[in-house]
Length: 257
Length: 121
Image 1 (cartoon, each protein chain N blue to C red):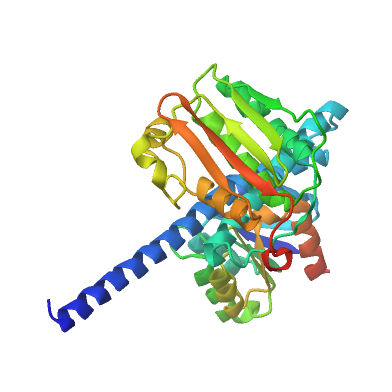
Image 2: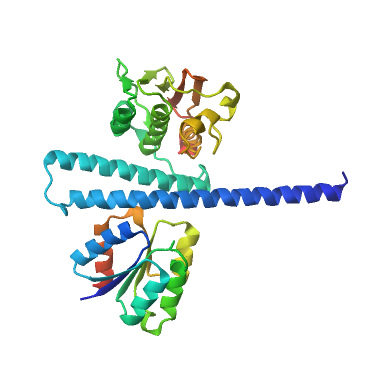
């Protein structure tokens, strides 16, 4: 192959890559639009209930509708963040690191999934740490997304009657959060690709055709921005356990924030 | 009574916004596409337009362009109310003369009413 053919081939490849990148961006933009349309409808209706547009609610009704409204708001935030990830990748997203209670946050996410867990017949069990945890700084909204993504996957890829077990363990240098399921697992041959953007395992696609392949990629990016590590062990047809760590001392705090 | 034209192809969202704005004391006209919107505007010039972008046929940008070309509506406030909200979409709407750009999922209908009240006085 001479030089000019080489350059021509590279040029073509470059054009193809650019086209694929544009297609990816458009795809995200259109999906976000569709998601936001449904989310808007839910938001507006719930707000009208809360405001009493459809008559006075009991305290219990107001409480539950308020929770539903908050959950929907979080979904809207997630869509907005996926869009900003699309724009800037993870580098320029701003993170707000402060000391928060990871146990309370996990509890609140589990509550959000109580409906889904009941519907699928997959109970979520939370093994809380027996000793108080050391203070740990993290971005609460971002780590909420991480826990949501892991629990959502664990429920989604479990079979009726399986349990999802969440545990939190401190070590001298970090807090480790684990989410264990006994679901479909990740095929051995696909495990090295599972954290890549847009990748979905063959059995996951067969189990549930709806999914962007963005969840674990986003999860990994967020954990790494905290200086932590996302890892997993998995066996097809017996289940997957995801672990992520939040370091107690982030190296180069200023640089990471 | 001030007249508001809502151009929105999702009839459910349109119905909700229309209900809320009617309750807030406005006269509401609705269209789901550019042709109907044009007919309504020709028959009765609205004081305010709430405009979606993604529509069948001519999109919201096309309608906005027509509005600004209409001598009776060069100054009519138009809020683009869309869930398509990339920087380039917002820039395009502003360039074509939109008064403001609101992302539907980021506002409640009350906030929308407040916004419109602020503009129409």
